[in-house]
Amino acid sequence: PYSLKIGQVLNLIQVYDEAIEFVDSEDNPLSFIDYILYLENGTEVVGTTDDKGLSQKISMSVQISIVDFDFLIDTSIIEEMEELI
Image 1 (cartoon, rainbow, N blue to C red):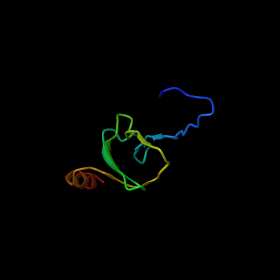
Image 2 (image 1 turned 90 degrees about the horizontal axis):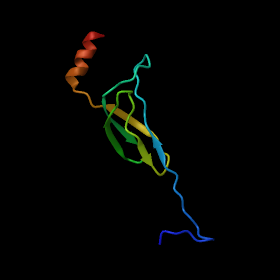
Image 3 (image 1 turned 135 degrees about the vertical axis):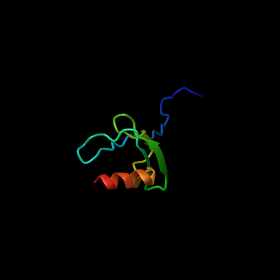
Image 4 (image 1 turned 90 degrees about the vertical axis):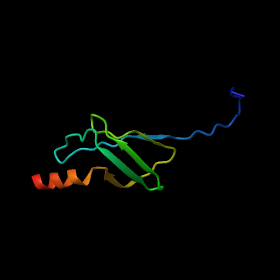
């Protein structure tokens, strides 16, 4: 059952395996930030960026787009950041 035969048709699926880089306005990586990505097929990907600001790899059999994203940050932290600006 695990051998190939001459004339056999193989159906191969292309896999898209991508990571997203999160950076600030000065292109510095946003490390260890929680996020949620909303993909056009209705899938939501929740994760945390690594030390280089990269998301976990998203593997899909078809190419899709990110339609929106959110940072999963405590609102009190956002308020403190706004006060510093």
